[in-house]
Image 1 (cartoon, rainbow, N blue to C red):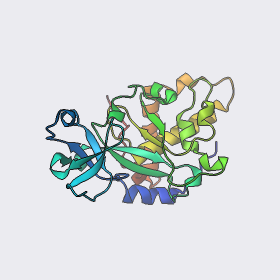
Image 2 (image 1 turned 45 degrees about the horizontal axis):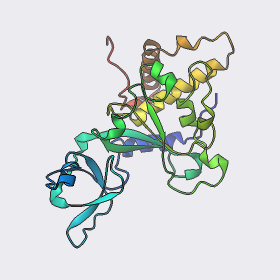
Image 3 (image 1 turned 135 degrees about the horizontal axis):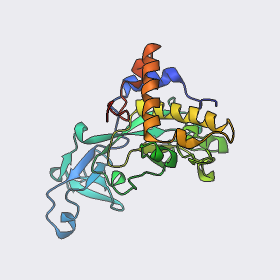
Length: 256
C-alpha cells in the first residue's frame, strides 16, 4: 500500500535536530510547599507555566494536571521538572496543518495523569496484540483546518486499525486531525519507534489486501512484531540507513 505523504529527508532532519524533544507550551513544574488547605491538595501535582510573567503578587499562571482552569502560584512553590523526568511522546500532524514535518517529539512529565489514567492496553487494538500498547488521542490543530482533507492523518488511521478487518473505525477514517501518540505507564515513544511501527502497519495492510487467505494472527503477536522490527533495523543498517532507527525503544533485547 502507498506510504502516507511525508518527506523522508525532512523526517531524518527532524530526527537529528529534535531527538531530545521539546515542551509544547510553558515549562513543566511540580507544585510544592503550599500551606493553605486548598493549596495542600495541589502539592505534588505537575503543571505548565502558561506565561513567564509574574503578576503584582509575584505569581505565575500555571495550568495544573487534573485541575480545571489556571492557578496563580509563586515561583517559590514551583519546582522545575528536569529533562530526565520527561517522557517522549509523538505528535502526528494532519495534512492541513502544513507544519513542514509530520512528526514531532513532545515532552510530558512521567507523573502526568495521561500515562496512568489510561488503559494499560492503550486504545490501538492491533498493536496491543503485538505487545505494544499505544494511546492515540486527538489534539488541537496548530492552525485552522477548513476542508475535510485538512483533517486527514493516515498514520493515525493506520494505528487504529481493527485486528480482524484491517479497517479503522469511522471516527478514525475521516476528520481525524492531529494526534498525540504515547505509551501507557510513562514509557518513551520516539520518532524511530513510530517510523518502525508505521512500516510494520504498512506491510500488514498489504497482507490484508491479499484476501481471505490471510490470517492476521500470524502477524499480530509479540514474537512476530519483534522479529519484524529487528529485521527492519538490520535491513536499514545494511542499506546505510541505520541511523533512521537509532532511537528505538520498542525493540526488546534478544532473549527477552
